[in-house]
Image (cartoon, rainbow, N blue to C red; front, side, top):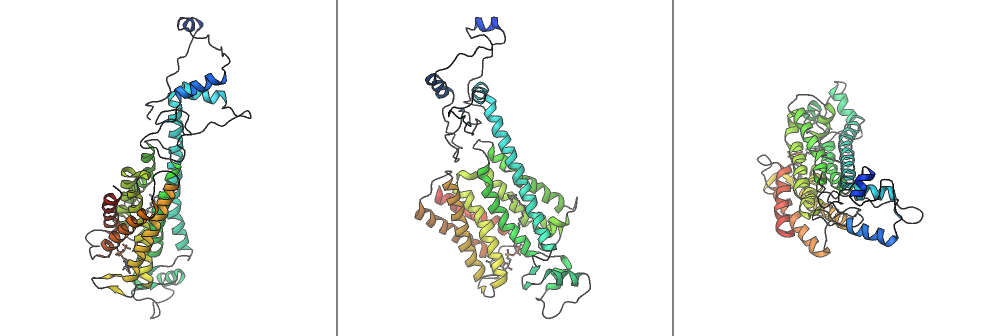
Length: 377
Ligand SMILES: Nc1ccn([C@@H]2O[C@H](COP(=O)(O)OP(=O)(O)OP(=O)(O)O)[C@@H](O)[C@H]2O)c(=O)n1
Ligand SMILES: C/C(=C\CO)CCC[C@H](C)CCC[C@H](C)CCCC(C)C
C-alpha cells in the first residue's frame, strides 16, 4: 500500500523523560487547541492531494494527502467539528488512510466477484426454469419442449426451427450466453466507481475478470466440471468452448481495466462495443437478420445496424456516467462524433468474414481501442 506524501509519522512520547528531552508534552497531556491552530495543522498535514490517477467523485474530501490516504470525509459531531479521535488517528498514522482504502477496495472486489458469480448462476437458473429458451441460428424453441425432446418424450417435428435437434443434443443456450455477454461488460464497468481513487484500485478491480479467467481455464480444460457455467456461457455445451469467446472476453476486461481503467474513454468505449454492440448485434441478427450482408453470409444488415446503434448508445451512456462522476471531461457533440466513428469501425470489423481466424471478442475491442486512441488521444 502506498503511503507516499502521507501524514508525517507520529512521534510518540513513551515516557515522561523521553517527552521532556524531545520538548514534548508528557503522555496523556492534551492542551486545548484553538480552532485556528487546529485548522493550521489540518492544512499542513492534510491538504487535499490530487493524484494523477485520482479523478473520482470524492476528490477533495480526503483527510490525508497520501495517494493511499483516506477518501472518507470525517463524520462530524453536533458542533460541526470532526471527532478528535478519528482525526488524531489519521494525522498520527500514515498507514491508516491507506488501510481504509485497502479495505474498501477489497470489499468492492469481493462484491464484484459475487456479482459475477450470481450473474452466471442466475442465467443458469433462468434457463433451467424455462424462462430463457434455447436458440440456434435458425430460431428458438421453448425450453420445456427442448427438455422433452432431450428426454425422448417428444420428437423434433417440422414446426421446430431447422437444425434444432443439434441444440437439443448439445444443450446449446445461445440466448442466455449472449445476455451474459451483454450484461457482464456493462455491469462490470458500472461497478468501477465503487473502487477508491488509490492507484491500487484498478488491480483490485481486475480481480473479478482474473478469477473468472482462472475459472474458465479450469473448467475449459475439464479439470473440474460445472454444468451451470458451461450451460450459461457456451454455445453448444462443450467445456472447451470456455477457452475461446468467454476466455477472450474476460481477458479483454482485464486488459482494459489495467491499462485504461475509468480515467480514459478509450477502454470504456472498447468494452461498450464488445459487450453492448456485439452482444446485441448477435441477439437481433439471429432473430431478425434474414437479409444477409453481400460479403458475409453469416452476418446480417439488422445485426450490423444494431451493432452500430447499440455500440454508439451504450458507449455514450457509459461515457456520460463516468464524466458525470468526474473521471474525465466530455464535450458533447465532439465526443458523439468520435464515438460514432469508433462504432462504425467496430461494426465494419465485426461484419468481415474473419470470425474463424480472429474472434469478435478480440477484433471488436482491439479495433475500438485503436480508433479510440487515435481520436481521444
Ligand atoms: N452483424 C451481425 C452479427 C451477428 N449476426 C447473427 O449472430 C450470429 C452469430 O454471429 P457471430 O458472433 O459471428 O457467430 P459466432 O462467433 O459463430 O457465434 P458466437 O458469437 O455465438 O460465438 C450470426 O450467425 C448471425 O445470425 C448477424 O446477423 N449480424
Ligand atoms: C458469454 C461471454 C462471452 C462470450 O462471447 C461472457 C462470459 C462472462 C464471464 C464468464 C463472466 C464475467 C464476469 C465479469 C468478469 C464481471 C461481471 C461483474 C458484474 C458486477 C456482474
